Length: 217
Image 1 (cartoon, one colour):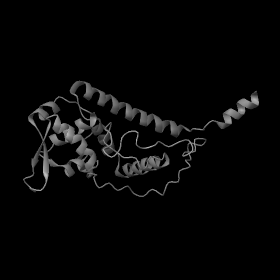
Image 2 (cartoon, rainbow, N blue to C red; image 1 turned 180 degrees about the horizontal axis):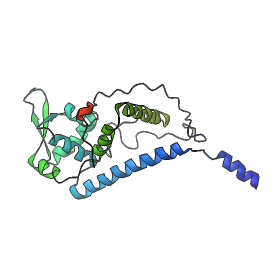
Image 3 (tube, helix red, strand yellow; image 1 turned 135 degrees about the vertical axis):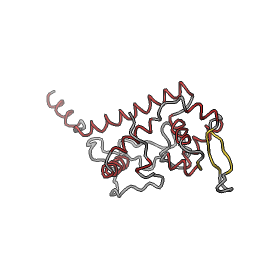
Image 4 (cartoon, helix red, strand yellow; image 1 turned 45 degrees about the vertical axis):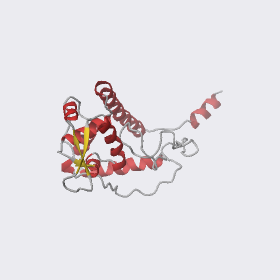
């Protein structure tokens, strides 16, 4: 009996304190995002992504889809899906650009401007505020390590839509999740998926440090 117990314990994955700290940090971030999303949905009928987009449009008279994508640090396809819902709800208007007749500009309607004055700070801005308070070197290091984690979990090819918004490219069930055979669960600190060396992350949508939101309380 004791030998069986010892054998079972030997087969159990071994986790270190750092792994626990990573999971706890992710849990706290997800919990804060989900709580804010639930409040926005129940009180105003808006998703967290929609609140984030409305706040960015409030900061400018009008923006193109590309400019809005840059301010929300996401892709044009992802932000377009959110904008479409806001247009249908009457919170955002599309108008022909005065700068370029071939393009369209986005701006808040009166209803959208009135609504955004009642909504809480977008949870994404809390994250961006925290990132701004970090030294640039630590931000780059965090970006590299998170990219490595995504690669090691086999989710490198997953779409990155805005928080709690379905990807426009695929349904939630379209992509199969990694199976135990894909990842070495016996040793969670060493995944069996081979990950290439991590280079300095490049984000064409990133804004300069000065454009990040001020620290949030």
